[in-house]
Image (cartoon, rainbow, N blue to C red; front, side, top):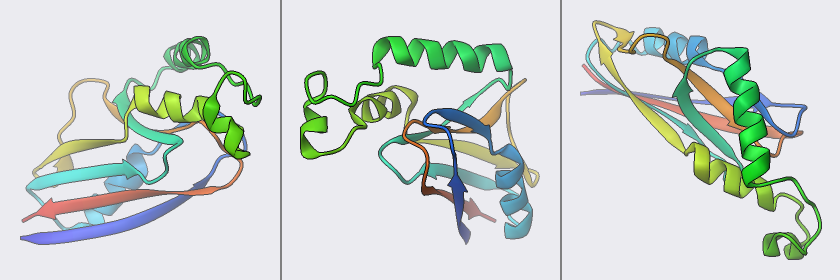
Length: 140
């Protein structure tokens, strides 16, 4: 079995944003030469997410609004005890928990085996600094 690992770096200037990273993952799959296997894509930070969904701007705006309703940004330590540590990102930890840490996609015939409209997204909830995404592909 072969294995291919790549750490991608992103720097999102906004506090919350969704970035379609499908093309980056597909490039790693091509480089790996793996035809049949699995592809793991992982947000390596506890205030970021990787998820699969449709690349539709209205849906992304709905997600942002919904996440803000569930876990509104509030830097004060009164809403989030985490912020008592000197951080201001208690909300980002909650948003990540909701949206998930990683995805696994089957590799079939050298391609990501998606359903209709599926794309891979990196979700940032505490941006403004460099963060890593791990792509690990295993198979033959």
